Length: 235
Image (tube, rainbow, N blue to C red; front, side):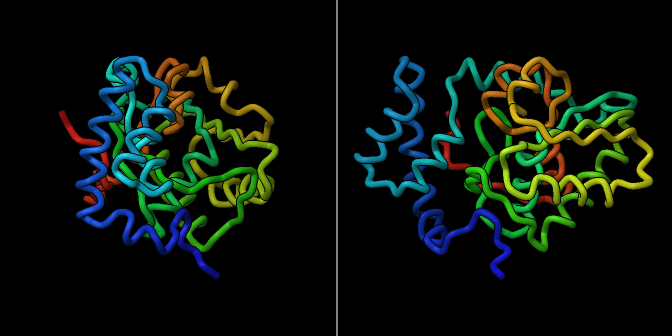
């Protein structure tokens, strides 16, 4: 079974050092256009056609960039990992677990303009547990214990396949943890998280709506000295 979450063989070519250098140039043009009011998808299509970028490369740029005001606003709402003791946190379950699986699978992941870490693993209603799932959940629960959080609420999307199996997996691994744990399977996870504080996610729409968020994946990468790809050009 192929356990490399979010990886396709073409990624070796799509994200080679030479390709990433080209994508950074392209991202500079995309950022200019979206800051001038152009739609992100239209801008990435126009620039992607000019630089002959693949669909995976265009998607990586779209997930990595943001309007300057958006990126700044998201960074202002970020809460430091060391400030979570005694707090209640909300976790975008599939979003967080899948990104950790991608990292543990040595697949492609990115550091984005808003500081979030994102990947190219498209969920689209289907999900299966892989060998890295256990490790990802252990990693998540270990970090939450270290942070000394009081309550953890994990939301899983109801329409996604195997959401029940992932819920059972998380509950089994988290048994005995010192925090209160609430795992819910529900239909509209994004909207549920819109007005919450201390949300663990990299979903850009949730980041724009929530009151504050925690970059748990970024904290993990810092600790293990893993450097994500950066396909946008720092200005």
